[in-house]
Amino acid sequence: MEALGAARHEGRRREFTTVRHCARQALADIGVPPVPVLPGERGAPLWPHGVVGSMTHSAGYRAAAVALSDHVRAVGIDAEPHAALPGRTLGAVTLPAERERLAALASDFPQVHWDRLLFCAKEAVYKAWFPMTRRRLGFRDASVTFDPAGGTFLAEIVGGTGEEPPPAPLVYEGRWAAARRLILAAVVVPAGPAAVRNRPDCAIPPTS
Image 1: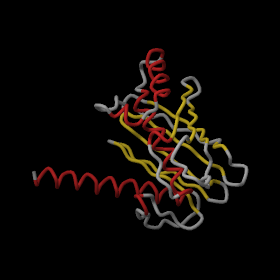
Image 2 (image 1 turned 180 degrees about the vertical axis):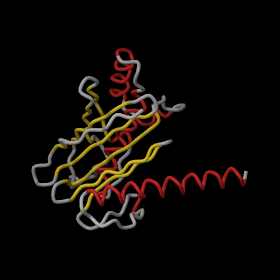
Image 3 (image 1 turned 60 degrees about the horizontal axis):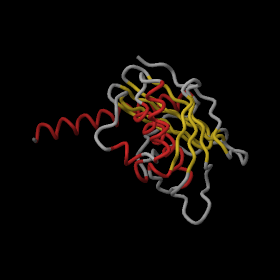
Image 4 (image 1 turned 30 degrees about the vertical axis):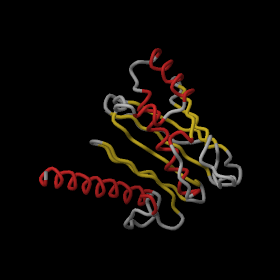
């Protein structure tokens, strides 16, 4: 048991190290001197002043996306294994209408694990939502609809907003991609008062 625990700890340490290496490279790409990116509240990365970003890691994959806050208000990315969700997870992370849509997608496009993709999309939305609001967002507080042809999705915040309107959009448009072993999702919230909806100008590169 001690050896297993040590192996898991070492694996987490490598994930922490490698994904932050990606973050430093991404910062350099936008002209920001690389700095340590430490975890903050609820694990959200603490980016340098004037920078927004998101990080993700999955088995064999690490990624970071950053932007200057003058141009982008928030970024959310997530990567997940391209496999069905385990056990009873689907019921815990979806709304009834979402399960109906997922069943139809699975029938028409069985090559994609839509349940896992929905989980991935909601994670990406949360990673954009939390830095703007500092509010928790449950999986059932967002409703996601996929466009299988366009590789896009629409997420609407339907709960978790409290009595006061949140300082963040309630509708997010994102992009997704599915490869043999990996599923990816990303959302970008542009800066400025017109950012009522998220209209990302990003593409997720294909993976093998």
